[in-house]
Length: 120
Image 1 (spheres, rainbow, N blue to C red):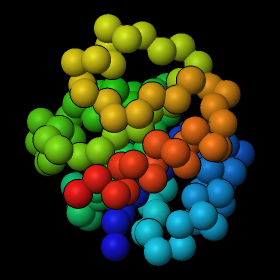
Image 2: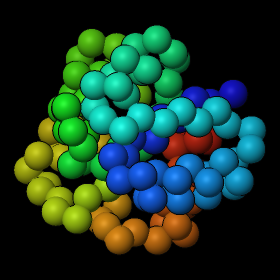
Image 3: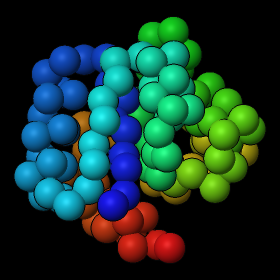
């Protein structure tokens, strides 16, 4: 069973994304974190396979989180980032799998996540 962490500091958005994904993918395990440090500690303890994170989160932004995880825990972890202000020069070096510009559609999220889930 694949494990996915959702990292979002805005409670309403976190609930909305979590409810959508857990309904759509009942056979996956979802974990949540409200900041980058909390997410890093969860990823370190568990065998998380996909990070779904906003870029602008407290304590360690989403890009810093991904860089740290890829350097210290799992260089092949799948990644999805969301942001209203995406800078390609920051994202390209991290080899992000899916970039969603806010506001993003759930159809686009599903399409991208389906590919990552089935990419073994």
